[in-house]
Length: 254
Image 1 (cartoon, rainbow, N blue to C red):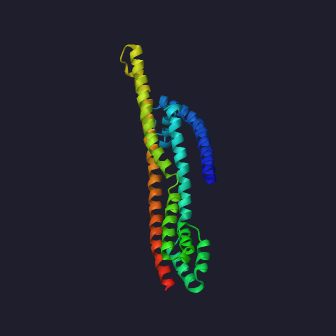
Image 2: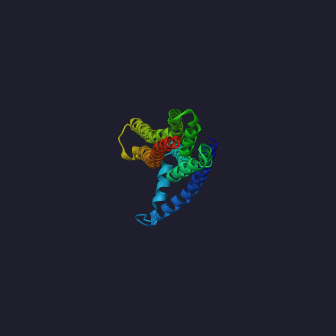
Image 3: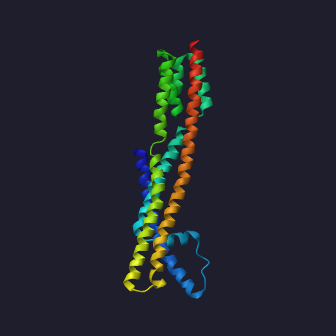
């Protein structure tokens, strides 16, 4: 949890610094673009990054700020999970071979020492199974299954928050669009006349919230799919390693 808060704090500071720098840069860029627009019929020098910043600021601080917060929090959790999952990845074949060699040479205690010196959920499961060998193979198997569930819960920790932000970002964008459309129609009603110039700006701003909400959802969805695939890979290794451990214990008992 401390690591999550640290990553979140660093990410927020970087985001705030980036937004402030982008705002300053955007002001300069907007003035330059306006000058060029007066001299040339079309501005071809505006990059995609500059256009994106311009559109984001045009969307307004209300819903755009909330959508940006969803992106920051989602990325912070995703980065923390990716780091944790990469640290949890173990060379299962090498660990199994080391445990088997330790069982044959020094017995259960030597194998437990190998597991203590190895990081990752597979090594932890091995240790729990080896620690219950005195109670029989059935007890060792139950310990492996139970502790495997605990390790799976740790792998999936906070992943549900990423899926929440994936769903929340476009919904906030749609809400901003609906509210912007209502405000546009209020202007039409107040003016008593349907003038495109009267509502075009409001409708454009309203649609920008949906666009950025979808962009945030797409970015977080990519990270989410990678994390889920990584978890599935580790869980498969855990299951295969558990079966291998049971076979090793049965052979050792003989």
